[in-house]
Image 1 (cartoon, one colour):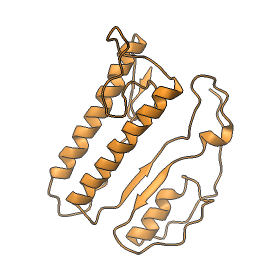
Image 2: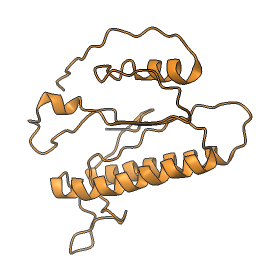
Image 3: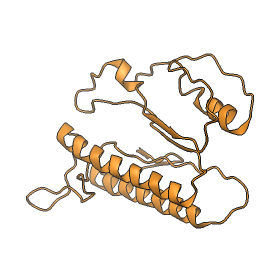
Image 4: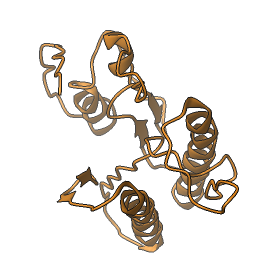
Length: 181
């Protein structure tokens, strides 16, 4: 089973799953770029969930599909492939953010991961790594409220709405739950 952020889709082999993940990322990319072309007079909220950098690691740092000596796509969760796919992901996300800023310099942009690093080969990562989410924010003004590093992602959008949109949404108690699959 593969999850693309909105629905589950059954795939019949790992190889088919690779193409499904790649196609999902490409569809999301097209949707964002189409949204950026629209002239809308009021603010809009756009959300995208890329499956990057996430196994299978099938693209190199330039975005080319990684192939073995027989020309077959490599189905790997090997760390060396993770690192090259991470470079591609970083370049892609940076480019997307730059495109959004060029289109709308007043946009609030949030780049956030939905989980931290997972060691997919050994499944023995320290639990703390799973909660080390990436979070980068671009605010168009200096209306920045004090942000505590201890705030979890549970409260992050409350912070954004309070800070950028004049809301007064109370913060929830921060907590973390470890789920073992």
